[in-house]
Image 1 (cartoon, rainbow, N blue to C red):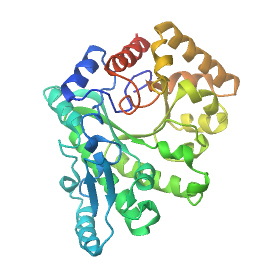
Image 2 (image 1 turned 180 degrees about the vertical axis):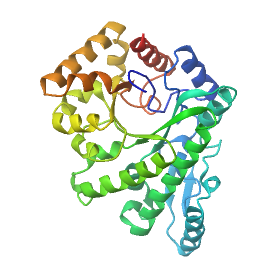
Image 3 (image 1 turned 135 degrees about the vertical axis):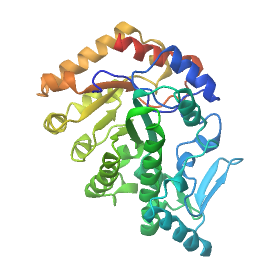
Length: 340
């Protein structure tokens, strides 16, 4: 269903939704996705964008800071939060236009037609919970009660997004962006166990599967890729340009993942190195894909699975690094040429 198709990770460098969608329209994706615009507003940055409705949240746009204020009022706000979770009140977990201008423009643009596929995205629970601190600068993930807020809140926001995207698409794909997974195992995160990662991601995947969505996780660094193959995810999105050889070290795990119906989303267009991006062409991209496929097969991955369970993305988002608007157009142009 999605083999060989293209989509983006999420963020773009444009400052307005109209500008971002104009570029996407010029070089269409075969899996359309809404653009995140972190340069438009701090509220569209990775953690703030999905923080609305979370108890204790304080957003300081001037200082570009976000934190959870742990105080006596937090318990009361948590009570209301979990009442909405239990009641499955998705409207209470909406992402507003102020925090996601690209989503609303995307829904409006495609509101009069029905797409076969559409992609949405959220910050993953580990990146969110380990990247969001309280007023004492301690990650809220290590507070057991607030960890439940993070997981349940993001689950509800994902379900809300699926509901909204289903208005314009027959099938919805949701990616959870989890760059922090590349740091697991380091001293700062040594307490995060593999079984914790599998359990939380499975909880999210199962819930979204019930809502009819496909679920992926994107990590733009290197990590224990075998860990993700043990989950119920449908898609593993990785930086194929810089870390494809690292993924090839897990042939048995990946074969099993692909055999059960999983897909690999190859982040083949480099976004983390602007000079490399500007030197990429249709031919260099074709060569890179062929070299990686050859490597995977040499490492005993099943040739048919490598060929048939694949889709293509940029290596990461385009809006948080040094890429400019012209660079983002080049990224989309290269992706479009892959499908041609």
